[in-house]
Structure formats: C-alpha cells, structure tokens
Image 1 (spheres, rainbow, N blue to C red):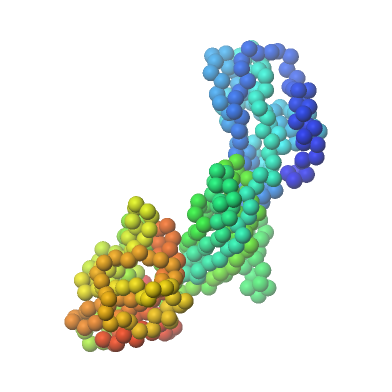
Image 2 (cartoon, rainbow, N blue to C red; image 1 turned 60 degrees about the horizontal axis):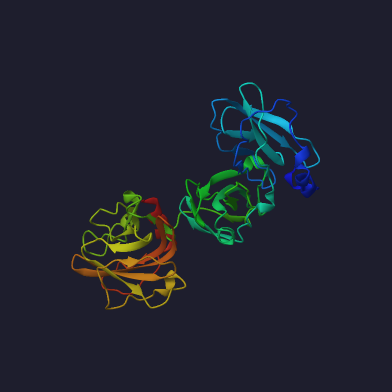
Length: 390
C-alpha cells in the first residue's frame, strides 16, 4: 500500500475517534498508556518505510498483564488488533498502517481506555538535499551536499543517509533497481567519505535526510564519480583519529644530490615519524584541523591573502615569511613549505581542497631542484608511480 493514498477523510476520521473503539466488553481500572510515539525505519524509498517502532510510557501496576496495539490503514476503516506485547515497545514490520493506538490489559482480561493516536503522515518529510558534489580520491570518494534539510528544521533533523549504486558509463545512467542500491552509511554532517571503492569503477550516489520520527526525504540529485589513483586529492587523517595516516612527506633526497628515489615522493605515513614534512592535527576545542610542520628543517606560510583557484596558481615560492608554527587548514587556500634538507632549501606547495571533521584533502607539488622556487605540479607518469608506492 502506498502511504500517500491514505489521507482522504483524515480530519473526519480524527473527529469521529470516539466511536472507533475496541470491542472488548471488560473494562479495566488501569490507566491508558501515555505518550505514544513512533519512529519509522527508512528503506531508501520515502513512500515505503521498512517498518515502524511504537514506544509509550510503561503503566506502573502489578495488575498489568499486557499491552494491545490497534491500527488501521485508512480513516474510513475500523481499528483492528495489530499485536500484543508485555513490553512498552512494539515493532511493526513492513509498510506501516496510517494510525495506531495502544491499550493496557489487566491480568483478568480487562482493557483500559486507549492511548493517544499517532498518525503516520509523510507530509512531515524534510526537504531533499538540494545539491550533491564530490571529489575523486584513491579508492574513495569525498561527498558533500547542501545542508538545507537540517537548516530547514533543526529540531526535527536527525541525520543523513548516503546511498550508492552502479553507474552505466556507456548510457550515462545510474542503475537504480532496488537490489543494486547499497547504504554507504549515515552522518549528521553535510559530507561523507565513501571508502573501500574500486579504482576505475564508476558509482552513483544519492543522499536523503531523516527526521527524528524516521521520515525519509526524497533523494538529492544523483551524482556519479569514479575513484582513481592520482597525485592530486591526497587525504590525510587527523593525528588524533588515525596516527598511521596523518603524516605526509613531499620528498626525501637522502643523498643530497638531487637524485632522490621517485618512490619516496608524496608518501602518506605515520604523523609521528621524524621525516614527515608535516602532520594534520585536530584541535578539540573547536574541531578545526591544523597543518603542523614536523621535519626539523621545515617551515611554511600561507600563500597570499586570498584563496587560490588551483594548485597551479602557486607558481613561485616566496623568499621570506616562513614559520615553524602551525596553520589552520582552510579549503581553497594555498600553503608553501621551505624544506631545509642536508643544508639545502627545497620548496613544496599544497592547496587544501576540502576539510572534513576528521581529515584534510589537498593537492600538492614539490620542487626537487635545490633552491629553485618554481613549484610545478607532478607529471602524470610520476604521479602514478607515487600512488603505487604508498
């Protein structure tokens, strides 16, 4: 039964509640259950929840035998006994009925007056996320969407659900059959990191907003992306979240002769290793993420006074102004490193692409020629070698 077809005559049905009672002839002195409430089980289809959980205040009496749950599928139908339980909760699997109420039955079979009636009305859905975008990563996709659902009604917003499905590249369509859709996860944030993906395999993504009652909004516009190995879009976790993935080394010229091992370019590693150029740290007081120089000879500065359009905008390293202090990671801003290695300066740059709650995504470049301030983006062939060495 499609829920959206069940509202005809709703007001009339509610007004005639007094004549919609159960047929039990025995009357109990037990008080009716109070504060009947519910939460829907989202399914991915806003019109067809997977079930409903009813909860109410427990009746405190030694004479209590059970609770009886009544429901009806439309306002023109009589209530019928849906189930009986000794608990003050009840889960009804499948597409819920339109209305429910609960009574308390005593040990002699007498039945209390009904509780309040709850009505499943998905017109209470939050608005769908208005937009969805992504950043391609190595075996992962960073998703970000408009937070309009949470902003529209903060007291009723609960979380977002993130779905994925195959993408038919030849026909340019998302495969939306129910058995093809996977739940990637849930989050209260307006961003999500989908991991353990296969490089080169395109996926479609959609996001819905869930209210505190469990109503699921329509999906955001679908968005497709393909994870890929790349020297751009490197992800570092905060040291406090994953130490092993919190450090980054631009380049290590162990011999000091400008002929370092290309396999030692662009390594994500333990942020506690002394040869890491920098690590990312989480500041607990305000949940901001910071770039912290690690290597003894490293210092850095923010590039310019405004965000940069692309990593290629950071073309030459400044001569002065470097510091060994930490700087906050801010999306769109560029940062330049001065690396004193074996008595020689090497320069490197990064541009922050996105900042999550627990990680930073950035593009980077490095100059292997000692003292040369020109910062060029890694060549594609070298980028592939770098990725393969992680």
